[in-house]
Image (cartoon, rainbow, N blue to C red; front, side, top):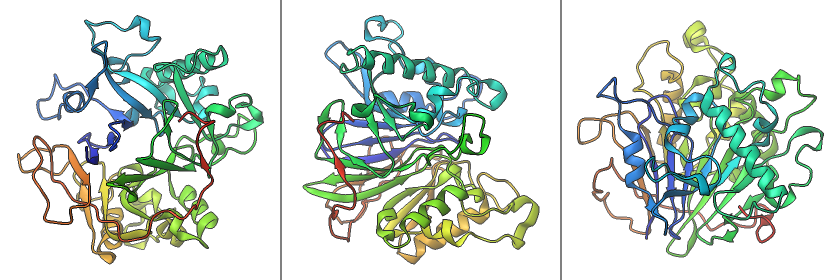
Length: 395
């Protein structure tokens, strides 16, 4: 099967499905809203279910659910649509989606006090936190090597709070290529964030949720080309994070290169600048470091904003000034900028599909979906930029 990346029309939110040549599926975030009160809200729950397979027990499943960070617009609808708890408690009548393996930052494992409505978070975030804790306990009790109990810890916590989790932990800067305990030759992933926290638990700057977003660059294979598509996904990471990454990689900028970029924080200007667009307008300045970090587009790269339609106004996100900057980046390499909530050929927002293959012909049609853009890799395959972690790590 061909690999592909699909962006769901979820307004200002993130919901992305990666389908690998191996058949494995990686879901990054969800924003599933109640459609009963508004017929204009796309039924992304139905769209997702149509794209998933059932296991031998007739349960829909994703192989991986990667949570960038626990905001409502990245985790909304979790509890209503996904099974949480041991697989023995799955209910056929509810028919919720199984998560074979969770990928998550350790920061939320210890932040129960912040996982609350008063912090802009909701019950879905608390449910994710509890499920992550359950799976960590299952690992410590030697029951974590079963689908439905698996979890991968992305990044380090302070004060050695991830001690004893080495076999299920990926350090920032590492690369890995396993899913549910098995190496998968059709992808690898470089972990760039969350930016490690500094100080104690009361350090609000270090624990800021947009600073702690998981940042991942996926190498997605096609027809034996291990580096056919580089996909960079960064949650809601803001300008300080991208400046930090540029400081790390400015001498080797190819580590931040991509064929496909999902704009951070729904095309927010705050990922590119310290200034406020609504307050300063044309007087704002772009951070050179952040722009460089987000500007490493390869030839014909596409940039996708998962957000509302973008207007020339003071809103942020999405921000028209950020859109202009991302369009410049794309135009410089002969690429394109797309918005997930733009109407498709059906007249309504639909799933935006990027099919990754070696066919460099004109875009093809794709049933029940938005447009397809073949992604053409014109650089050489990976050159061992990262220490590859396999075997001992199980995702």
